[in-house]
Amino acid sequence: MTAREALAFWLEHLAHERRASPRTLEAYEFSGSRYISFLERHRGEAISLKILTEITAGEVRAWLAHLRQGDRPLSPRSLSQALSAIRSFHGFLDRRLEAPNAAIALVRGPRVKPGVPRPVSEDQARGMLAEPGLDPDRQNWEAARDEAVLTLLYGCGLRISEALSLKRSDAPLPDSLRITGKGSKTRIVPVLPAVRDAIKAYLVEVPFTLSPDKPLFRAKRGGALSPRHVQATVQNLRSRLSLPASATPHALRHAFATHLLGAGADLRSIQELLGHASLTTTQRYTQVDAAALLSAYAKAHPHA
Image (cartoon, rainbow, N blue to C red; front, top):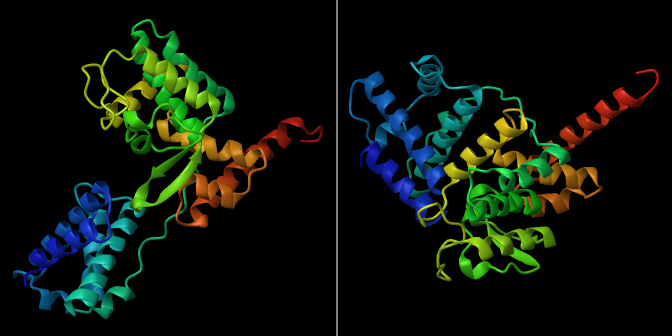
């Protein structure tokens, strides 16, 4: 078996057994292909499954250095993700194809400083939800649609892909939604009255006949609304409202978590609402809340 055949076997395993998302598969295929191409140039020969068991820690470090210094150098975070993909690949080779390589465990990735979420404030969130209806260049149904999508992101803490995966049969929305997120992880999300009202307003205005099994949100010509459209809408809102570049659609999801935390919600509940596999991911929001607390203290205390 060649290395590329082994790579295809691994990707098939991820797609059908692990149910990895298309974006994860794309990223892993890209990292795996670059890894094998580098080894072919480095060794000057075709790479077989047997050769993969003989790859040294030094060769893996050389590959990482190549990624760091190439025409399009990768950031430490991207390097760490690429190394994680290759570790997963070699772990699969060990478990499924009896082709172990202990040297991979000796390679340490670059130190990555955890990023802090950058949510919008409550006032900024309100402005983003209200502004689509004030845009004279939008038809009423388009404004209602954009407001409904953004309200889902902020009111339910959904990712763009999760909001756009809703079908017509999901509306009118119940008191809670069953959402399937990353890694096919399912969670229950409460639905606020404001979210239900926004969806109802959109359904009253939408000019298309929506089949129960078809997407709820439609583009201008009747096709499914794309994530790119939502991103472009928020980019336009940033300009109209003079918001910072960090005000993205995902910032509304960050705001959902941060504002809940500031109002006294516990981390475990927020973890479940967001669908995070690890509590460590959710704990990043405590840094944001602490920063806001210190900022308020600095502005209000007489001796600050």
